[in-house]
Image (cartoon, rainbow, N blue to C red; front, top):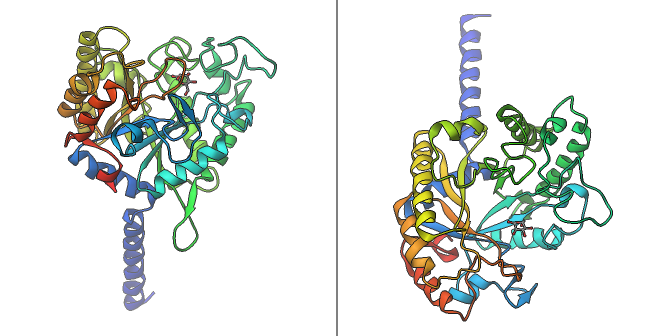
Length: 371
Ligand code: BMA
């Protein structure tokens, strides 16, 4: 090669490398969501609600209805959706939400400018069966030992598990919408294998080793993100349950790794006294928010709430001060189910009045604050 040729050749390589870097940096839906969340986190904490547009107290599947909307006049910024049952090829999830309807509402929420997060409570692949059974048999809560090991490469249920992952992936890929030129994938936060530091799910801490857990997370991520065509629209969340004494060491024991996780979450419910809840939540958030800052991760209350919200001042007195003191991306309360198991506000109640004050705080972000 002549010097001139060599110079031109090298220049092309440099140019090509630059374009590659630029393209890499140039944002796809995933990078855009990461940037957006980082910016929003400076402004406040987004309020989220699980299953928000499907049902609430005294209603189900009414288009355009939501208990959050009915309580404060605004949609939540974040909506949570749940895949449990999709692995079996079911048409509805474990809470009877049709997956087709779920897809529609995910698209709608994205189009109105909202943020989407998705959880998954898959059945127990070893004990699940088709005929009627007594809960928790066969469910995510059928916490038998040794299941995780059977799902990993070489395990007895590995092939079955790949068919489950394929069904999840197929649904996730279908989350796209037409924006200008063709279909664009909708960015969202995926949050599998949550609360694993407890023992109530079959992937919980007494049912597998930390290495098996991490291998399960990696297998799930690699299958969903990387087979043949990568998915450019997923953020990955790892969310242990409230401990009250979390340390970096206990956290790291099960952490899937910096290269795998974008958002660190805490699932924190008030089951006991308010004092315990506040103390424990603050203790764990001290640990997680420091870790997240050092490792350039987002941090959120990925699930939280007080079952039936029996204290009508809970929103401003208990939740708001926690939100004020930590750089949380979002705080998502669980679903408003009819069986006394509601965690969101209920329109027309005194709790909803208090929720409105919570909504009015400059620190909480609802849909219009992020549009
Ligand atoms: C749990 C409960 C269950 C529900 C599951 C998945 O915490 O709300 O009733 O089936 O979440 O949404």
